[in-house]
Length: 250
Image 1 (cartoon, rainbow, N blue to C red):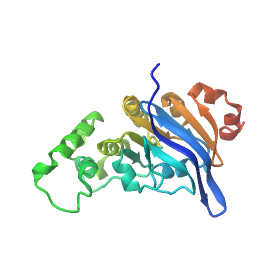
Image 2: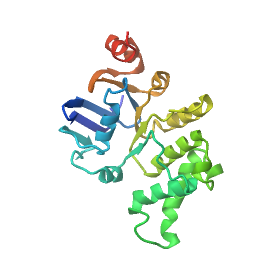
Image 3: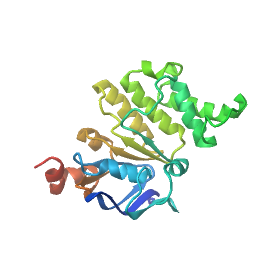
Image 4: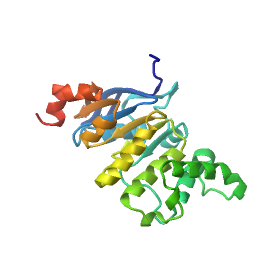
């Protein structure tokens, strides 16, 4: 069996807020072609870990590597340009713009920097436009490409957020509760999309729905009180006594 490539890894990461240690000596690695979920109760440190990996927060201790590159001191923009893209739990799209415009902005920024910094000829946008359309087609959003985002259902907005993430041309995708607030039908659509992306990217997911985590994940890391309490495949996690006590309360 071929050893999978480690794309992103953290070594003994810690983060404190005042006297409270929110992430405590966490070491974790993520490989290409696998979905790795971070599971744990509220306050376990999951979102803070996400913020450390994307460099929205700076660790107080430890190191982060993206491939062979040390990104511990990198900025969020630098990390994004290197191929780490995050889809936020709170909707992060421009509601007044069209679906296509939102994805185009992400595609353009991934290649040329801030799209609002200067004007260019339309011909200069051809590659980002092609990428934007390809991302929309992949998620079956071309049918609503010219609709204002504010008119979309919540489920389509979540799919748009994933499409915007893909337009950043990432190697690593971080999904923050991608099915939160969705109906059963919308959840099924989002699950189908995530499953279709698993083999192509390294996907890291926070998701409170344990059934979805068990269904989609190749690996699961369970956190509690800022520390890793378990790691393994879905069957390993189901059988782990510490996980049952920390997450399920029994």
